[in-house]
Length: 269
Length: 252
Ligand SMILES: Nc1ncnc2c1ncn2[C@@H]1O[C@H](COP(=O)(O)OP(=O)(O)OP(=O)(O)O)[C@@H](O)[C@H]1O
Ligand SMILES: [Mg+2]
Image 1 (tube, rainbow over the protein chains, first blue to last red):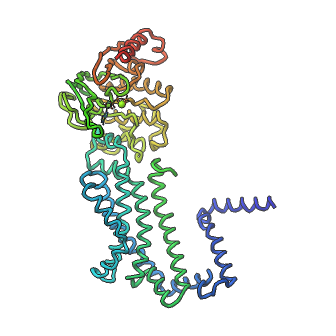
Image 2 (image 1 turned 135 degrees about the horizontal axis):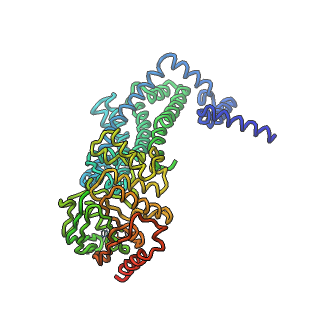
Image 3 (image 1 turned 180 degrees about the vertical axis):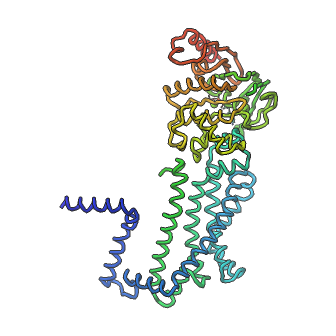
């Protein structure tokens, strides 16, 4: 028996070494199995809790009809546009506030004040100003992404040892070069943390906004499914959210972190 | 390389918590000739770092003047290279890029500045480490990078604040011997700060004993070069000089 288990184990290890992605799928297998068993046992009515097979089938048909790809694209483009502006505004603002005492005195209270008015709290007034459209959605996402990025950038800038500034200065670096050579890379690990938080919040804000003002997108898909009572599509939407986040995190954010902060020994692996 | 003149230098810090002034440096005058190696030695808190930071231009002085090659110091600049006790290497740059940093800021082309960097890395026996990041090196290696990074920028004066204080005793001895060797080869003007009397006498042409922010005495070190610990450990002249400096520093 022990030998048998060991055999299976070594088999798994070898499989994992050949296809590392299997390792990240494995934890989901028991979850899916449990879900499948619960639905097969008919503990809840089928209409309330459909099984994995039905969700897969609904995935197939929605892809076939072209609805899912279109909605997915809409959601991702909105997130990308919002995130882009969040970063483009957030990083310079964070660096300014981090470097300049005067900017900090002037802007810090404002930052805290507006951070407190959560993204969704802006929706009512944004809908009045911009209507039910892309502008409203983008503003909400920018708003959501920008605060974690700014606050973490400030933290990162201020955590750079003064000796690094001094070293760069006495090697002849101008203020502009120091920005590029010292401040930005020094703050990068914190900026990435801010970005990760920002994206996470932004992703949630996107879904919430699509539910309220959207005419397309994954959030809209789920809300629409509720109206027609299709639990399958709601579940599908939830699963897609999880998978997409997983992909963004493990294919984009984690590799950047590995190549920067971890490589430089600024963050522990 | 140029000479350095310090005249009646003083520094008074304002302590905002106590609301009082603290004078860390009183009326210090010092002349360092081009190509000279001067060690400033004194007990903790006597104002060594303060003096060095003023020469480097990191902090303003409150009295007197500092002239490098006859020109007053206004702020940090590439004419004064600095080696820090905490190394202060750029963690996001490889060893090669760290050493090439100064030339890069001067606008030296990539091929050219990497050639310079390689040359200086070879001088410190660091050729193997060129492609590595600072966090992958031992403390001793990091500080060798710190020294050649400052040297590769060809400053008029090299300022060093207890650069070897945070490495172990054996490594420190090796670094000291290497520094004297490199100094003999390149002959930069050096101001080296330490609280270790033996280190000061081993390295310097001249030792400046400092206490409570004042210069006590300057002692010329006439030991022959090249210097090595093997030769100097039992050297009578070395012992005599060290003894004198130690007495000065302790008596104050
Ligand atoms: N920023 C500051 N504000 C107020 N006082 C200061 C400041 N920096 C240094 N001092 C004071 O000035 C004096 C000299 O400090 P300094 O750091 O120059 O000493 P040091 O000789 O380098 O000592 P060590 O060998 O411990 O490094 C000390 O009494 C210290 O408390
Ligand atoms: Mg000191």
